[in-house]
Length: 476
Image 1: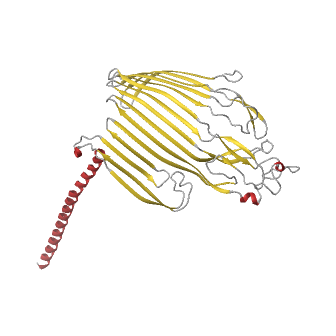
Image 2: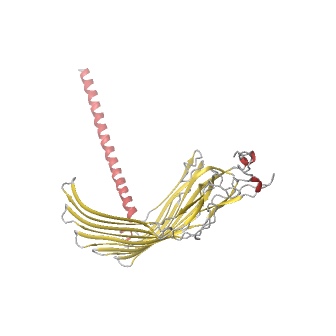
Image 3: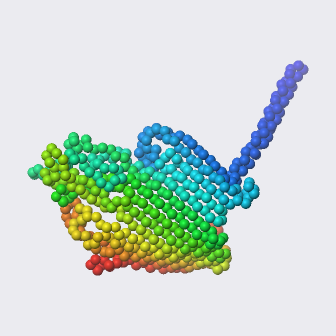
């Protein structure tokens, strides 16, 4: 009997402990739920708050780069080892869009920045009155590191357009010694003249935008962007000798400057009605190169005695290469649509643009004769039109008719040009201003058999013509 009582006591104790554990878990779960529900509600409130109330945040941190790597920092600027400060902020203000301030305000403003401390930094600011007007500005940078190990004996700043040789560098394969020229091996003085340049380009982009609603149906929008590119990219060129002859396979690698500025404009007038919409606009792009050419002194010559003084300095020949020519593009656009009914709709668009490039030619050493004219006189006219009519006859049948027209009319002057190749041979080339015109017409019907199967019946006609305007010699 005593043993039985002891066993019953042990079982009872275990059951009481088990019941206590279950009760404890239940209490803990209830408490967790009590805290979790408000946290979930707070998270939901935060998401709503971001959309309806001005919010602000600031983040500051430190990034560490363990080893130097040009490739790792190719675009973010983290190419050197060490610590980098990084920051981001967003400061907003103005009216809330809920009962927080009565819900009557429509004014909002915002200032933001991201990736601060790197070469891919961004800044922006905006102010707007919802449904009435808005103004915004922006700025961002991007650094492209091309090489941190480029070796050159030339003297000149990366991003500049003139490079010289050290006065006492001498020549390479420059002295004729029977029966053949000397080799192109560099002596100790020439090898010592080589130094390392970090080559890269930086893009700085500034923007401005503004919009205004005259009425709920009529509005105007203007956007402007200014892109500034500086630095250099590596380029290979040929080289001529001191007597005006090419040295076969004698190539140079240069830091070709990128001193570019591009301005783009976009102005549009928008109308939105109950059944239709219409947009008329202008787009313009103006590209300018700060240089017209890049020049460099050439140490690969055919007769060293004519340019170098024994034991002294050399008077090197200067070679010239043209850089990217400035150009412009202007375009007028119109697009719109109209709903005849809920089933029948018409949309279309028109555009007319003109590209121009008329920078004066440079007198470089690749030119083998007199230039036929002082500049390219380049001009291209682009025309586009499209129209499409659709009818949703039934929920399963869609009928459509469409038309597209594109024309690129190249009106650039055609001339004959004489060139010098690296083997000193003259050759003639004719620039051919290619043009083309393409028209497309389509009738189609799409019928849905099931949710996963459909039948399409269509007729398409396509017309293409290619030609050249005023080609020298009369060829078309």
